[in-house]
Length: 221
Image (cartoon, rainbow, N blue to C red; front, side, top):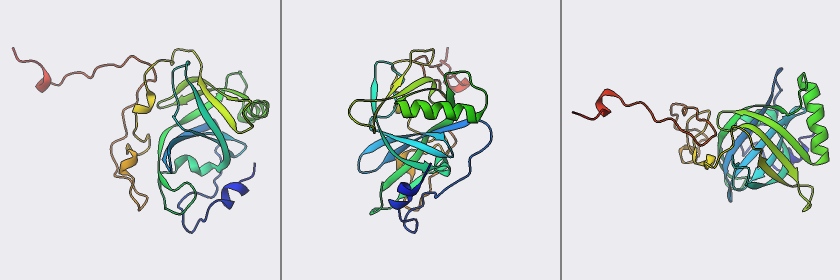
């Protein structure tokens, strides 16, 4: 797939965004980036044919099957974009701060062996307008679908399937980067983040375990 539109929109002397990247052997990857551009949104990206197919999701992903989140198909992004965090300077396309909100691997729901076979199947679903896949992320897990609407070829819906990872918790409240532990406000104009310890992994469901009390926290007799 071509990156010509991606490159046409950007001046790489002015933006720190990557220009390419070589895919890895093994599993297909996905990434979701939280992006404070002219309006806050989440960029949902799936690896296919050496690039990242990308959708802008204004409200972010949901683990509630009742939610149907608008997802606008945008230009393909290079593979190395999966690791991009930083600030796109004012005056450039997509200007604003970016963090990696979630990442991991994914595969189609069908039991297909090998990356090439999986990609071929997913590309067919993409063309047909109904992608169904399973995410193995640090925040998002389980089955999801991307479905094209009658509103146009670029207008899709991101929907969580009903499975063990579904719930009603607002998953976007987990606002830290899974790479640096930073939140958007930690990203400065020099494209650096105030590094924190990576956030503890949380399940996508509703049940949360309460942390064990330390000796100092125990109630005195």
